[in-house]
Image (cartoon, rainbow, N blue to C red; front, side, top):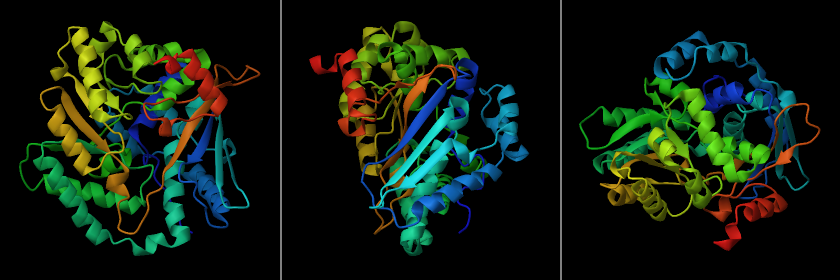
Length: 402
């Protein structure tokens, strides 16, 4: 079978930006990640073996001078030393454990230095998604010509509705070609006319390079989860904001706030951070209620929310994005990151609902034990971590008192 991931920057920007921040601030931190399939999928026989082979093939994927030159040009906020790190970076399949039980359920775990394992998640998820369709025959029915037309129509609706949006679809795409098709269609359509909306770019650095778009993204929940495990969830958001400010000094100023819910974030979101960060990302909960909370918080700090960016990325499709755009207009500067609906919306194909989450961390390799962590978003269905850790963190954050 062909190699699925062949390009180093076929990955989301925020994996690189977080990796840089981790090296600067937590260079000796060790972490564990765990795969979760929310659909409880039965994978075909031999899937684990082929996945192990694909992960082994990542050891031959290295960054090119072309990729470095593009990132230097488009990502000026990344310090120059980081590209020396990327030049020397090599994947190691020993960081990953893959197995499959008798019923066909898949188990994937990572363990190692945070600055190394952080660059595995998106690539492994993209491999799992594409490999599943290959091994079940679903890829044979993918009509990319029709998908190009469908994607252009989605672009038309978004742009005419005034939506500013990006592709966030790498991790659960139907295939590399599917994401390529979507991004080409959306760029082509935007270049055909003038619209109130705008297609900004993509989270995927390789496709941003291929189509000369802006690579977009800042951070993922794992940053706050790791700090919550090492230092406690009460101040994890505060520590994450400090870490980000120390590394990027005001650039990449959109904060993902929902790792432990709105209430504890709001208590940590003081006036200095509210002014420093350009905006917030909504990734769970009721989008309308979350926006109202954000607007209210800014106003309580005497900050005009109309000048603040709010990025919505909570399982959106075109219809929901347009609805939010209408509601948010005049309240903030709304924009949208849309993933699976863009890159895995083929007729007759069920998108995968898979994630890989950071579940434990320790400050240095010398510690004899890990500290477990979890994610407690505004949707209980998006919780991650074992039940006892979830219970403990909910208790620490007084969530059961709300």
